[in-house]
Length: 458
Image (tube, rainbow, N blue to C red; front, side, top):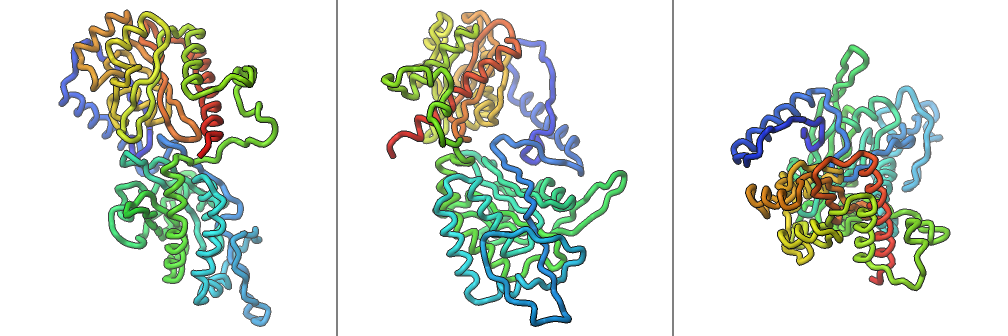
């Protein structure tokens, strides 16, 4: 990991069955961090983060200013403020003083923009839609070359969702792709200030050459209930940076948008739900659509069907873990119908809810799969049972199950991780096609769960 992103995978094999000492684990972690830093280098480009990220290439982002005609001053009428940006023709030499800036200097401009923003945000129900609204606002009130919004995880000190907009030009696109610290530990999030402005040097590689451009960076914290839960970042290539009026205007927009961003963050609605227009059966998986309409479906029956489908795919032993957000743990839910699964349930207490794993446990494979929203294989039961079981107890359980390999798949509903499916333990590694088949089963279940939860009375 480097700068909150995965930059590579360190593969190795330990020919041992002994428990690793804590100092050995810490030494391995340090070695991995040093390798990640070396891999990142100066030309580090962020890869996909653990949680959803929307990167949008906008053709209307950072529109060039309207031309100033000094010979015919009367032709320069005051532009009308609007939140719907129009595509402007690209100019080769923009003037330093754009007519748009004059419109923003009016005494009522802040109240006007904030009121329009509040009206636009009322209909938005997810973080991506809110981000697009603010993108259009930034087109009007400032000359931005890159724009992003980060929302922090509810329980962890990391970014849970990030929305980025990249400009159409090569330099603007490169500016948006290169990372800027906008996480919970950045300066804007840690200090009680309305905004934070600083300069950065952008290194742009052009073949074998590297050229540098100065960038002005504005970061504004999103605050709700006395807590900083996100950061809005606006960057510009303008040599003069942001004017005082622009700073106050952007800060006012951020304050108006903060309550809506806080609501979608707590609800986990980062991305818009799938379209439900048309025939309702198209939203459900084929197996659900074929069931009689008189059968009442619940989340528990959906998950029980998921375990039965896994059994039909030769994964006789499997169990489910669900997220308990109040306690910050993964808690045991259901087990499959096999002798080994029942023994596993007896030893761990899965169906009784006694088997819990902290969501932020960095060594547990189930927690990593859920937290990073990816499939994580594990070679031993200890990788999924710690810290609930020690090494010796895990070995005993592995002998009882006649195998210790597991495959852990995250369960993500409407962009929010809600649990994990654990295949195994088993003696041999499953084939890639078998795992892909189960991944399809999980996607079917998550679609049906999303439909069920959206239809629940509020």
